[in-house]
Length: 580
Image (tube, rainbow, N blue to C red; front, side):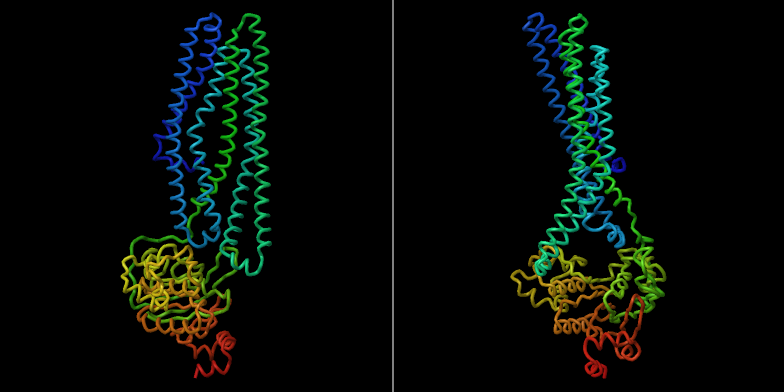
């Protein structure tokens, strides 16, 4: 929690005035037992009704002032906690967007969502409770002990003994519950993962009639969380009974020994009432402290998870923010002996890959599943840094580019078509905010998407639901291709972006791209040999290595892996005819 204090720097006034108001309320509360004792020992003992009424009015005044002070504290606590929570969420979201793909893969989407929402809420609630109660409860306990000492020093020893026993209980519970709360948050992440998989893959689950199996997975995860919650709740449940038991015993002892003192003439009846009132105040304060300890332990576990994200440094960083000078005569893209692996102890995904791509060339990248095709193209926009070697764009190492200059010239259509809620127009303007309707329509025509968009009642202003679920897979792919084309990129990366298209649409799209992307360098990742046959350069990737590069005819003669892929898809007679 201490590391998150920077988010309260704009709320110093609230963090100071709020506790002071609560402290003022506590001071007023400490005077109440003395006033009650005075009413009993003076007003009632002397049958002085006027004194009783005056003291009663003083009690009302103390109550009103205490209530007003509490309201101010509540306002300041809400302002500071809500403001700090907002800042934490903004900082988390901004920092997450600076992380590279490697860190995002390691942290996981469900866990990040839990940290932005649930964990931040825990911290936010703890800030409010600290402002409201952190000063009041200890002051009430200490103040009650001091006031008890002023009334009767011997009986105040009972207060000290009770306070020590309760404090010991709080310490024991806190030390045992902190690790359990951390485990609860991890198990909450697990539930988030399962829920996300079930909601996004609901159709697959239904298609395979796996509802019962998935319900069992959810039940097992929630049961595990429930057992952990029960365990920590049992620990926390000890606080109130132990606190009440110790306090009740202390009250009994105060009344017992106090009665002896009254009979001996050493105390007044009102003093015993005051001592009991102070003991009750200590009880209530200890209960508050117990709840505050429980809340703080949970908030501490959540704060640790938040700090874990904020302290995660991106592995891919900018070397400079200043634009670099490019070499217009160099190849558009060049891989120089590139090797890459996702983790230090993992196997290499790419090994000693070298090739160059001229400006305006169309490059087909083909290979089996898991061969490293997507990894290869992800190194061009520098989503990951190479382990060895160098990737150059316009003769400049991609590690020397500012992110904006490098990625502004690259349009990418990923394997999973991602559309955002809004309208088709909003999605097409994702990178080019000033795109005209003519530019968007032209991009839709090239992507073979204009036909179905034009049939929609609102055309470009038609709604796109979350994830584009109101469009088919092929329609989403074509809209994503159009979005990339609207930006007029110098490099267009199509990562298996034709997989949901039928053969006719695939052919029409390839023909439209060839006719309308002059000067644009196109990297076309696919598993279909028909898709790359007309490419200027074909790269055949196998087990992370470049098995062959050249044109279709050259690879058919020289690359066994490429020839095997073509033969498996089209047959020997058809391939020979197409080659001829």
